[in-house]
Image (cartoon, rainbow, N blue to C red; front, side, top):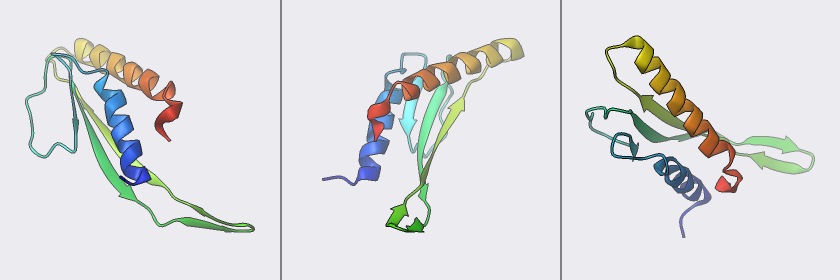
Length: 103
């Protein structure tokens, strides 16, 4: 059975994949640079876990893990590039906000 960390990252990847289309690609831990599709590219990086924080009464460990989402858009016209990026960020935000089932 995969760890809780891996389960959450897989679930986040699948949520981001719902945005994928012929002109928008979603990858996890992409190694090699790719050509950026028309509507952009999303790369989820697994990130790293930090040392747990301890609370002493009652003894509780708080684990924190930072996953990085890279968003790339490309267009020679700055106005189109900015509007494409903004639309993509809003879409990602809505997918993540309605996903309380990640944890």
